[in-house]
Structures are given as C-alpha cells and as structure tokens.
Image 1 (cartoon, helix red, strand yellow):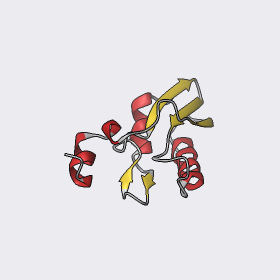
Image 2 (cartoon, rainbow, N blue to C red):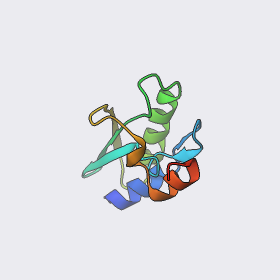
Image 3 (cartoon, one colour):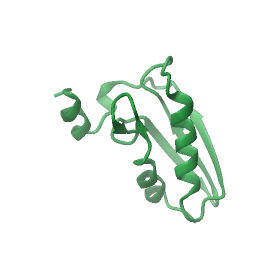
Image 4 (cartoon, rainbow, N blue to C red):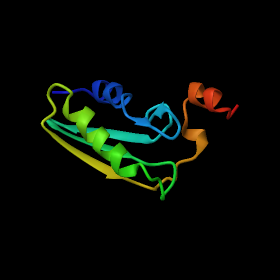
Length: 99
C-alpha cells in the first residue's frame, strides 16, 4: 500500500507551467486520501480560468498511478478554500517574490 508521503513526493513532479513550480510547493495540493490501493488527490488551481487545468489534472493522475501500490486514482478539483499565495511554501514565496 502506498503512503501519503510517497504520493506527495510523486506530486512534486507536477508543475504549473505558467509559474514553473510544482503543485506541492505552490500549495495547490490540498489533501491525499488513501484507502488501500485507491488514492484520492484533492487539489486546486491558481484561478478558475486556469488554461492548464486539464493538463495538471492528467499529470496528477499519471504520477499518482505510478506510485507502487496504487491501482486506482481519483482527482478532485476544489475551490474551497480558494487558493491564495499564502498557501505556498516559504521557498516558493521567496522565488516568486511574495516575501
């Protein structure tokens, strides 16, 4: 069975191409729920009109499916709570100038 840490580490491969940073550091990955071989990733986007949303969703499913022990992946896009720059890691804030 996959662990939350393994899935989160895999999700670091998913980048928002507009910002050039991964969804974990950007604070877009909200939660990972594991139920045996089933994994659900709850995430958000920087805006409702994000043009790369479908690509990010597919990448989330792809990298999560590649984690040993994962057989089924569900992705859930949420706007609650809305994403804001405060959700970013300290490193991401520094790199993007949100000091």
